[in-house]
Image 1: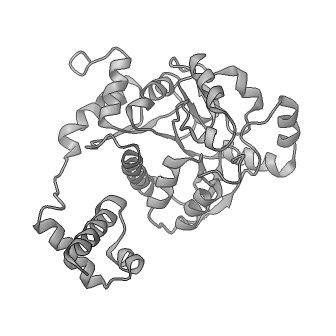
Image 2: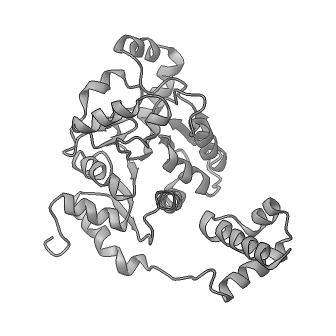
Image 3: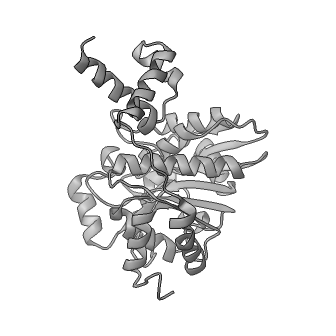
Length: 321
């Protein structure tokens, strides 16, 4: 291995360890390098400035902001993460890890956990630590994807949650949005579908991302909307969605899709013991504000920059509150 190849290998090892979150054992297995060698590469990366570690103390930078959000929006908990990046994937990864840590602390025997799906929930699922729980169920709160080649497979997320929590999985194997109301009525009348939907309504914990209408939406990737259709939704006033239920910046339900959407409704989500909404990046700020105004969540997980943007959209500053 020449010097350039060695340096490229060291950088790749450092990225897998510090950015992706793989263990040294996982990296060694993936790259077919001994674990002691991985350790030496990581030491080299720190010693030569390839990796520079700094600590963002959330207690000093975000605790006041969290308290403000809890007070202003009547939240049970606001978790605001200082993230020194505007990279969407990095933000989702950090928020996913943070949400997984929060879930690990609050989950207990007998819980029924309702989950949505999407790229953010995928990060939560894969960051979740194992916990030996009894009599726990994990249930999908909305239907699945429409395309076989969609980037996100809701079943993968459900299985990850269930396996790590020793829980029983319940999959809602119907489309999320159907062509017309009659099709929805026929599907939800099925006894198995009805059972899963009822379990979702019984869930005491709901974990969901707050999406926003754009061509990058998982709803576009899943085949439920074309790029033009999702743009039309935005122009009509939709700023975000929870479990594919769209709403305006004032938290009003975007009604023309309700009759065709299969899954838990927003009024039921807001009644959960823990309604945990996750979203990051400034594009999500209007959706977060709409969700807060609609009181569709009582736990918010977001990043610091986005939290400040939400306050700005709401006409608030930290000094004025």
